[in-house]
Length: 531
Image 1 (cartoon, rainbow, N blue to C red):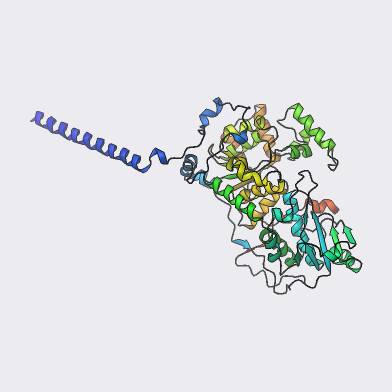
Image 2 (cartoon, rainbow, N blue to C red):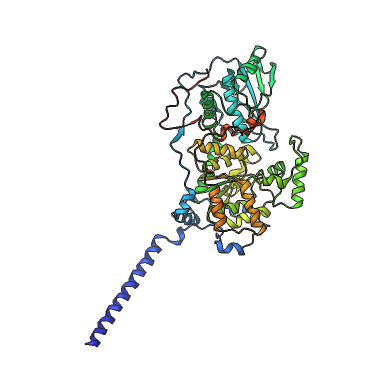
C-alpha cells in the first residue's frame, strides 16, 4: 500500500512538472509573437544605468550636439516605452502632473463698450529692439499704444543691429497676414507706409518706460498736431504692467497669444520638432542659459576656467552698450543672479526625482565650453536633444544664421513641453512662462537659484551629500514654484520711481487677472473700456 501511494504521488508530480513546462513554453512563444526584435526601435547609444554613471567617461573630442543624433522614427523608441512604464509609478506620475488650473480660462474678449478702431490720426512706425522675446513683448505693447493714440500701425521693423545680427524681417519670423487680419477690429495695421508719406517729417520719440494711458493720450497724442508720423525708437517696456483699462490689457493678450503667430515655415518646423521629441515620451524643455553672451553680460564665472573667465570679461568690456563692467562673480552667484550651470542642472533634476532616461530638449544657443561643461549633465541624462539632433542639416538650413527664427523654434518646443525649466529668468524664460500660464497653467518649474547654489556649495565642500536629505529639501523648496495660478506680483515694497516699475512682475510673465478668469466669473459686467 505504501509503495502504491508513493507511485501515485510520483505520477502527480510528473504531471505538474509537465504542465508548468508547457505553460512556460507558451508564455515564451507569446512574447516572441507579440514583440519581435525587428519591431523594437533602439537608440543609437545604450542608455546607461545609475550604476554605470560612476564608471563612464565622456570623450571631450566629440561634441555633445552630435552625441546622440536620433533617427526620425514612426514609433516611440525603447527608452520612451521604459519611461512610459516607469511613469505609472506614483512618484514619477506626480513629477509630470501639471499644477491645477483652478478653472482658469483665457478671457480676452473685448467688453460691450469696445468699438472698432476709430478714424486714424496718423501712422505709428516701430523699431522693435532686442532679441526675439523682447521684440514680441514690445510689438504687442505697440499694438496697444496704437489703439490708445488712434494710430495706424505700420508692420514693425525688427532689430537688425543687436548682438545677434539677424537680417530677418517681420514676415520672416511672424505670419504677417494673420497679424493684420486678427487685429482688424482693434487697430488698423498696414504693411508699408504710403509712398506719398515716405519723405514726410517724422516725430522720432523714445517713449517713456512703463507709461500709462494718460502719458500717451496727452504727451504723445499731442504730436499729431504737427506730425503725420510718429516713430517709436524703442518698443521694450514702454507700457505699464498694471493700472491700465481692462480692454487695453485684453488687447495686449489678444496681440501676444492670438495675433502674433510665427511664420508658417517656422510653425511647421516647430511642430515637427515637437513630434520628434514626443516620440521619446513626455519631455522637459530646459532653457539652459549657459551661453557666451549671457555669461559675459552677467559676469558669472562659476565652473569656468581662468582663461574662460578672462575671455568673458574682455567681451563685457568691449561691448559698449553694456554699462556695468566690473562684476563680482561670487556675489552675483550668491544672490541668485547667475544661470545654473549644466552640472548644477543635473544635480537639481536628480534631486527632484527625474530618472536618467528622461528626454530633455535643450532650448538654447551654443553652450559655452561645449563638452567640457556639458559632460556632467550628459552623464546623468544621456537623452539630451536640441534642434541639431532632432533635425537634419537640410531641414535646418533655411533657419541657419537667423537667430530670431532659431529662437522661435526653441520657443515652440518649450511651449509644448510637458515641463519647462528655465535656468535663468531672462526674456525667453519670462515669455514662455506667461504663455504657458495663458494656455492652462502648464507645468513650469522655476529654480530657486539663490537657495540652490548654497546647497550645491555644501556638496562641493563635503558637508552635504546627494541623497534623500538633499532631495527632500529641494522638493519642498520648489513645491510652490511650478506655475500654479496666482495674481501678478506688484512692486517690491519701499521701491520708488523707475525701480518701483522695474520690480513689478512683467505683464507677459503672468497675465492673471487681466486675461485669465474663473469659468463662473462674470468679469465683463463692469469692465472699464477705452474707446
